[in-house]
Image (cartoon, rainbow, N blue to C red; front, side):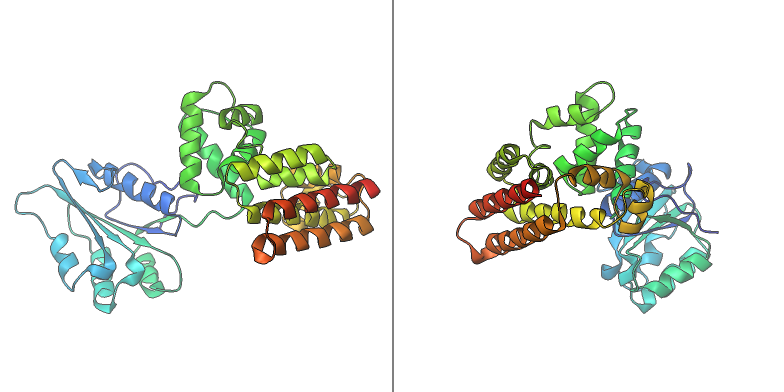
Length: 339
């Protein structure tokens, strides 16, 4: 029976790898971690490129393997010792190589650990099915898309370092760094080594010296809350530090759209229920409900139009993206005040 790891862990199951493992998914960081863990457990080094003392490590791609070459790599060595063979991109294996992999998975050679990576899509699906039938170990590393999954990933990263972060700190870190797992993992490592205590919103904000405050979403939050001076200040800082005007325009659109979506749901409904209905995290529901004070349906309609115009301007129809965004922010704040 194939075993599977959680996406946020990306580690091979248990000490001492099984003879054959397939790592499935397209989240590169987690795939690399899973492969490195298996290599290390087999007596090699988890570094890239893999290397080992007393253990031969072969790292190849399926698209470049010739018929019979994989069998040669997994053949017993004349000098003894084990071997680890990593075949990346197994979904690209041709018919002959797929048959060779299936045969090796069904009857693995002694002292050989075979590690396969597979993107997990429709391509090479038959090979993946045959590996499952052969009972190989399976480690799942799907792409992390949802907000909650990224929060879980961050919690896991801090747990690896023996540190703890609260939800405010995690959300602020996502705002500051973005969604790329490599960047997030590096940020967690830096914060863990450079700070003390619980990693909170204040700690993250102080560490990034305003970077976490000057994202498009912060600009949007200040605008829909009617805080004109703060919104413009954050806008200018964001533009000065290299934030794309398109991202700020998108954040403004999402902020206004969230007001309309959350405002259409009765306030008597619990945030958790609304979150499931709208596909938004509960904390976002609570914050948007607070931001709704002072807004009317007419004001939201005008704000929507202003954001749409600004979006067109920053995407090439206008001369100055900064001026277009300032106009949109002024209109949004005026609409709220009017409400």
